[in-house]
Length: 183
Ligand code: PRP
Image 1 (cartoon, rainbow, N blue to C red):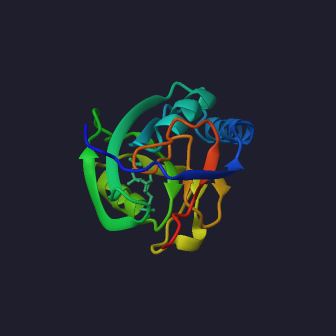
Image 2 (cartoon, rainbow, N blue to C red):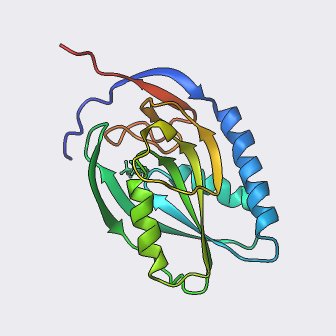
């Protein structure tokens, strides 16, 4: 196995598992209300949104479906490389479907913009966006978000699906990663 490097140092909890659970239930209710008598397809963006989308999918409660798409923007470190690429594609056609993209975090907005453009070419009936964390201060391209869990400050966070070098996705809380000491 390739060496992933240090997992970094965990700092304070920014959003606890209890706060997450309450907010995910709210988002589920809002989507259930907005999509009443429809069967939306939740598109979970690998890998960060996996934990959130599993909880949201159950909270929505409609006869919804779930599929996955892989997009990667970050390199191995804590800063985006600026390059967005598709790493895994959907397993179903979305033509004529009410799609809800489920993302863990929007930072610069480049990943989601790439994904929205990509999905639009497949002729869905509608595309909405549900994001757990919105790091508004770092936005480089404008993004219209339909459902937001939490607006967060410009700190590097891990847990509840979010990683640093592949670590910490399985933390139940959202935790700040301590900045690396400068030498
Ligand atoms: C993260 C996150 C978003 C994107 C946000 O994904 O899940 O997809 O970065 O950044 P942006 O708004 O600046 O584009 P990452 O590439 O780290 O992959 P992962 O979901 O597999 O962790």
